[in-house]
Image (cartoon, rainbow, N blue to C red; front, side, top):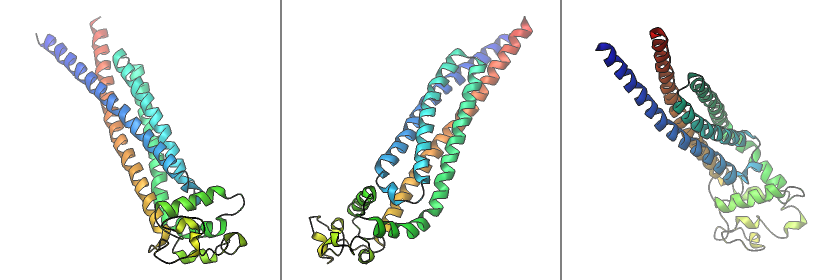
Length: 260
């Protein structure tokens, strides 16, 4: 009687673990889609501004997230197959994939954290030089477009203030005409509107574009970190459930062969 009770109990544990792993894999798949979406959103939404940054760590973090998201979605599907087949070898491979993805996300998280620490200093050192030295110069179209978008999106003018443009290569050339700032500094951009730098005509924001861009990048890095941590927690839960399921299957095989 006790033996039958024990077998029923073992079957109940196996079924519970199986359903828990199915639920986990569905959540894991959704988590993978979220990670990939955040990575793509970061690249698409920030593609123009990337040319203003000295380091490529921000873009690398986004690419790693996309890779991790794809792997998570594929692994979630494979996990469902492994649970259905109830093979320890498949489950062990699934467990290894979870650890691999966890390591990839850990690398992305470390890169994001390191870049977060360096972000303010990088912008202070390079943004002003990039904006004043490369704007509207031959072969620097991507930087010109990025600066124009930056000033319009964040309603700012110059890296620290609008007076930064007085020392720019562009405004000290004949191409600028009588402009005192680029036309993208204007609240309502029109041709040659930059000839008048009165606060009623252009954006004069305390801290300039540096503070605006720094805050925007920081918010993106925090979102990347939050999504990564959330999926990592799911992965640890899945790893524990998978380990338990592998152990239960191992005990069942052991009991089966001991009865033979």
